[in-house]
Structures are given as structure tokens and as C-alpha cells.
Length: 248
Image (cartoon, rainbow, N blue to C red; front, side):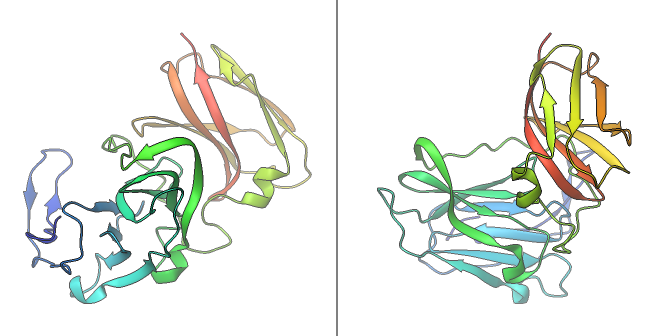
């Protein structure tokens, strides 16, 4: 997508790599940057474009995709130290979309609930503070694995529950492990139907059932080595998250 050729949308066969069924081209204002960010929501219904001064959502299920164009954010002028205007974007393993800026800044923007329509997607401008300068870049690896298909736009079920995450309901140790990790639960609810999600840096996901006990030991000896994003999930609600390094 760019300001000269617009946005071109096709069907993509992730088995054969073929593209087909081209949609009518969508054009943008001339204030669009040369190349802008594009990211699909986890359920593939919404497409997000970040052309410089705004973030736009398109509904892929609309009879006319272009007419579904909804501006969910206008650049608010924030600088840290340079302008955090919208640029490249990526869907992360946690189900959120992160957007970089075109200049050197300490911030990323984040769309917290990208499966939700319009402003319900909850975009937070410069919502992530980085430990150092980032000049426009953002990871662009393809999603070899799949994000959970049960992701819901219901605000009670969607995304990361920040309150629970911050209350230390769970302890996971060690976070650098070779064979086993231990999970200790310090609360008195959400004991049934819990699942451990481990997602690596290329999007491959591994799921483990957590018993209804307050203490669990999970065998990860067959897990490929590397860095993982760990989540404990109950009925599509994330109760806890951290990072895990699996050693050889």
C-alpha cells in the first residue's frame, strides 16, 4: 500500500501461496506516507492501515470494503523527542497490534482489541514506552502459526486483563527452564478450564492443559528451545502473562 498505487486486497491461500479475487483498489489522501503499515486483526475481519496522521479500520466482511473505512485515531501531536506519527504496524503474539513512528522516538502505539469494530478496538497512542530510541522499524515476520480463533470482542472476554495480571495471582518459575516449569496459583477463582499458551517469536503456539489444582508442574522437555510469550488463559480471558526462555 502507498499513496500512488493505493491499497490492493486479494484472497491468499496459505497452503499454495496463491493470490486471487482482487477487490476494487482503495485510494488514500496525498498526505499518506510513501509506504504505510497494514495489519489484520487476529480473526481476519478487520484490516488496519496507518497512513501517517491517522489509523484507519476496514471491515473485510462489508459488502463494500472501501465504504467501511473508519478513522479510529488522529495523530495527537505527541513528541518524544520527535513526532510519533503513525507508520509500520504488526500483529503480535499477544493479539494486539503495535505501530511504530517514522521518527526516532521512545514509543509505540498499540491497538488493544483489534477484533472490535471502530473505537471499541481501543487504540492507545504512544501507549508503549521503549527503553531506547526506535527509528520507524517493527518486526515483520509472517504468522506461521495461528492466534486463538476464539478471540472475542466482548470486553469481558477479550485481551489481557490488566487488573488480574498485576495482582500476582500466578507465579511461574523458573522462567529460564529446560524440562519443567511450575505454576502456583494464589487466588480462589478461575481454577477450572485453564490453558497455558506458549507462543514463540515466529507465531507458533503450544497449548498445555492446567489442572484445577493450585500447583501445577508442566513438562516442556519436548518444546523447541527459544524465547516464548507465556499466557495463562481462562475462557478466552488472559489471567497472567510473562516471558519464558526454553533452554536446550
